[in-house]
Image (cartoon, rainbow, N blue to C red; front, side, top):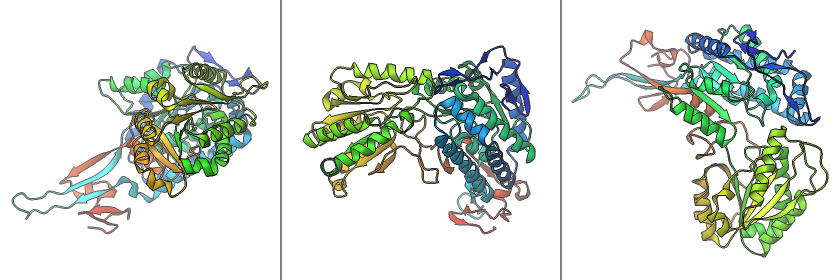
Length: 527
């Protein structure tokens, strides 16, 4: 049952004076439950509990953390239809999407459970002593990754499960040994509370310290600001807008002890359609991309918002076909009146830019909070001159840039802001002919796709979901997959430390039987 209260560790509390409700965009009305925004005292208590819990949780074995993560997955599944119905009522997203996202959330948790159970993720590295080395004896040095401390995770508006309360950031932080305080997204506070209850139940059933998790409601920015500025918070995870992510980054960097903010932010995800692909498969790609642009009302961080091609009859045909196909698709509900309001405002601002032509815009009657898709086009020279054309329009919107030649195409890519993805639509033989263009694209993105669509992010070890700023605040890290755990740890060395006092990961006998690098050689052997 949803109470509208905050989880301060395993305590439900609602001492705050600010109240709010979530909104059902499909029915265009508020939901019934009243939520209490976390008070300053509740924020302080959550951080204090997390700080105390860290002293225990940081040393809990990988096997125990694995049990915790798997139990969270079990508890989320046990929420059943209540979770799915609440998700849909707060997001306007269909039941199939809710079920799929729940499956992804559970998969992420179980993936991290397997990672920490095996244990080699800590990257144990041992350089043994050589006291006879001349002219200077070599000392024994042993390194591994250790957790940072309490982490604040901001729930995402567009993924109420997979990027929110028990999403990838939280799962990775737990796996690393870090307690988590979630700043629940106000648009899906009920979904967040249900998932929070699952985490609390799992923590209690597996013997985790109280305070390993808290879930704080917030109707605005105040709770998030206080959490980021709190001296006992050691890192932040965020998925959302460039403005929101940058504001948190600035707050964290201005603290007396600056902390990292791993923010995944804006991206227009450029798609390059090369001439032979435009000529041979332009109609086919146009139909595929009409579906990708409108998928989930365009509310994906990997939505293809920018398509680049070489000017000519074939590109004109592609634009015409894309424009025809996209208006055949029925609009769908967007997440919230604020989301669709921002979409319509940014779309109108973009459409008023000099030199931009709207080639398609859904014009039939639609239900309230449903997003009208649009396709626009612009000359390459105009796009280069006006950086306002580079900005993301979050929703079912895309722009086709008509480049004069390959040189201008390369120049445009070089001057793009950082992106999560880049896509190449080409015949195989074209790849060699456009090497410079592809190299320029690689320098601007975190993931490059060949003959596909960027929408859809596989959860796997090889995935990079990040990119140069403003796609993310640190392009060295991914927000998806097992390597996302590296955001919540730091390398730490022991020098000349007694073997019996070392962590098990670094002891001579290797009691955990994990892979380690010993004097430059990877091995599971003892020393």
